[in-house]
Length: 69
Image (cartoon, rainbow, N blue to C red; front, side):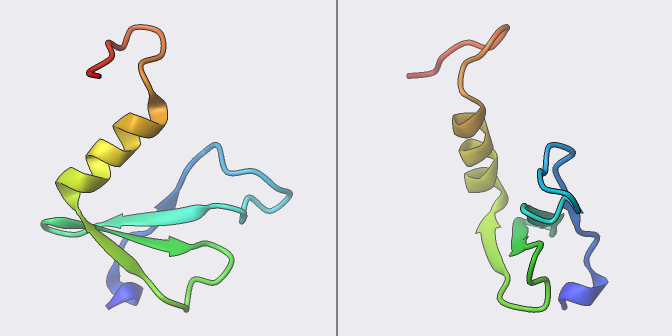
């Protein structure tokens, strides 16, 4: 399953090789997440709406964004 997915990682991933990050891949109703250092190991999936809410929370209100809390 994971070999067929289109994995991507953040342009902000750090480290010399940029491999200290997670990678995500969109699915029809979910988002798959894996460790970029161990791409053949376990993959977690989350409902797309939950992942979107998680990213919004991580980003926080910031400039030009309003707080929903």
